[in-house]
Image 1 (tube, rainbow, N blue to C red):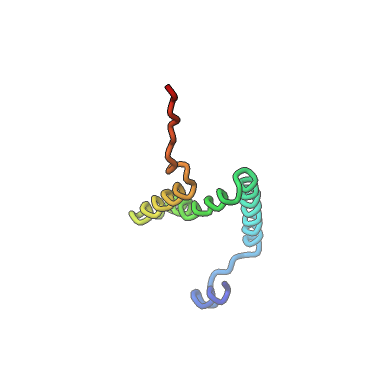
Image 2: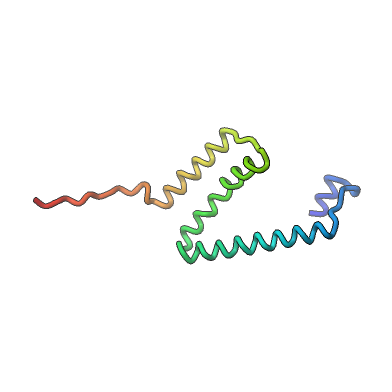
Length: 107
């Protein structure tokens, strides 16, 4: 990243202080550790196939968090994409699309 930063900003860009880097490192380590523990718990509880379905929710959560915390505007294409992901998840999961078989009562 340093060559890219130097190419974009030039050599006089505002460098972070060492104390700031330490704080960031601790936050990254903590959030990664929490995510790893959650990942393992979900894997244990629901299995690998269902766990992979969770990865499809990453773009949706990124869009919603960007809108909530960064005041990014949501456009129609975002809602269409989230709807397509929802339909895809429901098709892969299959529970919503199964036909219910009503047992016939013998008379």
